[in-house]
Amino acid sequence: MSIGDIAGLIAAIAFAVLAGFLIYPLIRLGKLFDQLAQTVKDSGDHAIPALDEGVTTVRQVNKSLEDVNKISSAASTTAGNIGALTDLYGSFLGKPVIKLASSFYALKSTAQSFMRQRSAEQAGNSAMKPKATAAKPKGGKE
Image (cartoon, rainbow, N blue to C red):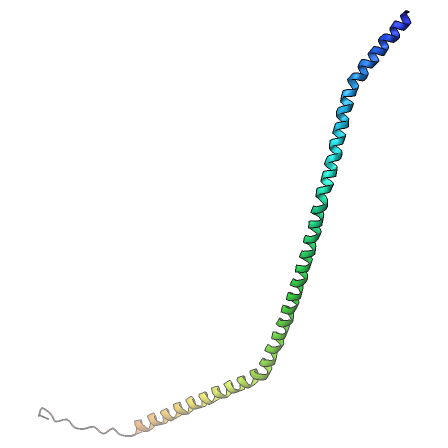
């Protein structure tokens, strides 16, 4: 063996040792990639049912919102109808009731005025009439 052969043999052994040291991290890196691939697959497997449940939930919420919209529309229509009915009763019954109340007020005022005038006349007539007084006996027995 020549010196060149020995140097080649040393270089080959050094390369084999270096390759041996590099294989272990590469094997670990391969296992890491396998675990990463499995994690991504599991995440996808769990994400699809979660997304399906989310879609189902959104559909149910939309259905509930449609029901709420129907209810609020009916309530709005009912409020409008009640307002129209109130206006109808106000115009139909309000004016006659106001006229009736004002008639009763006028009748009451007239009656009170008549009673005051009559009581004033009676007071004036009684002031003009002399009062009859009975004479009391002085110091005597009754």
